[in-house]
Amino acid sequence: MLRRFGAWMYCYRRGFAVAVLAAGVLTLLLTHGGFRGVEMAFWQSQAQPCGTLSHWVRMDGPGSSGDPQAATTCFMQTYAHCQVATLVTSFSGVDTSDRDTFVIEPVLFAGGTHPCSIQVNLARRGVLAQRFPNDDWVTCAGVDQRSDGLHFSGCGAYGDLFVGSA
Image (cartoon, rainbow, N blue to C red):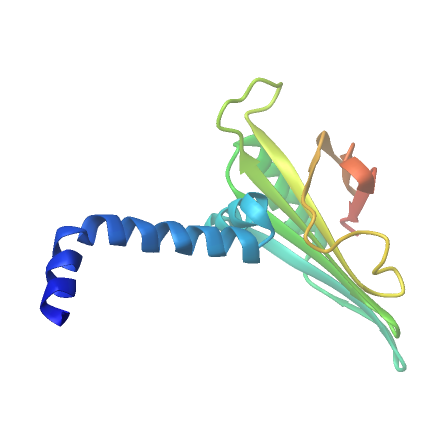
């Protein structure tokens, strides 16, 4: 009986390997927010990090870390050259924490005015957590660099967003 099973496995090893591979891909899709989640995880792993800007409010007062001017300039330069990059902003308060992730993603079949797009995900914890789902990536229509920072426009359900450079 065991010998027959071994002979069967030898004959159908390619089909078995394809089935295992398909099961693995399906598991990834289901556990990481569908194809969009897998796609964004890929682009984030390939991206140049432009910086993480953190702001917090604690009992001893407010604080921040990161270089806003360098981060916003880096993001705009990579967007102009359509290079994959990320910019992360975070805020931690007494009862809430927010993490906004911006990703420049090349568009494979660019039909618009720019050969890449900006994707954003707003992850909310605490009081505002119910406003947006934490695994929802949306496309922004565009970004402008102004003297006070980056102005992202038309970001789906999120509307217009701002990342300060001061």
